[in-house]
Amino acid sequence: MKQLLYYTDAYIQQFDATVIASGEENGRHYVVLSNTAFYPTGGGQPHDIGTLNDVDVIDVEKVGDDIRHYVSAPVTGDVHGTIDWQRRFDFMQQHAGQHILTAAFVELFNIPTTSFHLGAQTVTIDLDTQTITDEQLAQAEARANDIILQNRPIETKWVTADDLQTYNLRKEIAVEGDIRLVIIPEFDYNGCGGTHPSSTGQVQLIKILHVEKMKKQSRIHFVCGARVLQELAMRKDVLTNVARQLSVPEEEAADALQKVMTTAKQTEKQLQQLLDAQLTTIAAELAAQTIAAKAFDGFSMQQLQKIARTVVAENDDVQVFLASHVDGKIQFVAARGANVTRSMKDISAAVLPLLNGKGGGNDQFVQGGGEPLVSAEDVVLRMQTI
Ligand SMILES: [Zn+2]
Image (cartoon, rainbow, N blue to C red; front, side):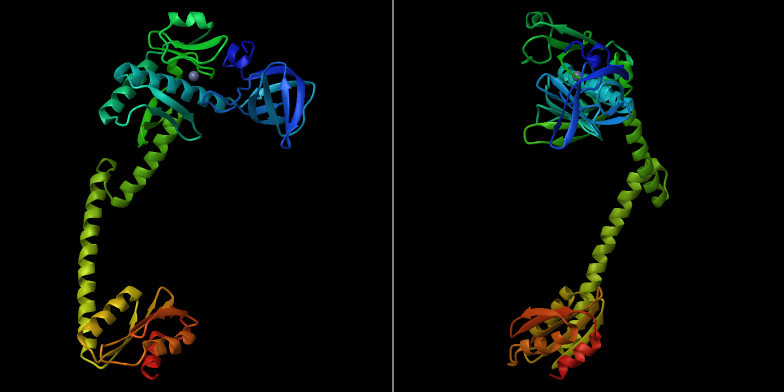
């Protein structure tokens, strides 16, 4: 394992090798090489991609002692390998950033990390604590950025299990045989098989984005290196857009938005009060009649039902026939007062075919709706002549 090129030198981007085995797995071709700089999925770090000669390497996995390079077409003989360096260096930055941030939480608050995920967008660590304060996050982030700025070396060292006790390891190592330590002197000693830059300065910058509450843990989402700039650019775009729409400087956008939201809530409340008053007035007018028939434009089914209920509650002798053209449909309601004996289902049965519609209800109260094949006025007229 020590001869693997990504362990010899994590900065090797191109190499020559010979195909020593090949095969097919679930329709995917793979080759095993005499040596390789392609990092296989492992230790929380995704695999490299790249090319062997002109053939794409789309996946790299460790199977037993072999490193399988899954290729888009078969390759044989001598090959020249090229790693997608942008992808790999990004992973190296994120991975080293994770070591540093994890060590900062241990150093400052004695909170260990239980797992690590390096995703396409953000990176996460799960901290073994249910509560973490904004102050703690700020301190850990600041400490991690200090370590980055100090540009300390990131060293790797193969040691035996017996050697381990001489190092102050962050957590116990379960691996047997030779162990690979990743060391940031006087800060972090950690068993890890991933790839890392040679100094902390190359991580560039670390930024915690948010905390996700888990059942028993806190998941910290963060980014390092170029991803910080990408996140900043995205947030800058969003904030600029929001501030422009609010016609305020960016730093005032949150306050301005809060004002807009407060005003919107007040307006909504006032509108609801006006609508309720309008429905009450309409219901009072209709309740004064024996045949209370009216067509509306834009009234919802809920509003028709509310008017009909109010009317029949006030007049025991009334029959209520309401219809509305709303959202490209015709909705209707028919209801009767307590002294009326005819069934409203007859009304529904007569109206639904006009609308190619569907409805429901009982003898006292029916509602339905369908396509606007006739107008709401026509529906109301039809209901009165049944
Ligand atoms: Zn690592």
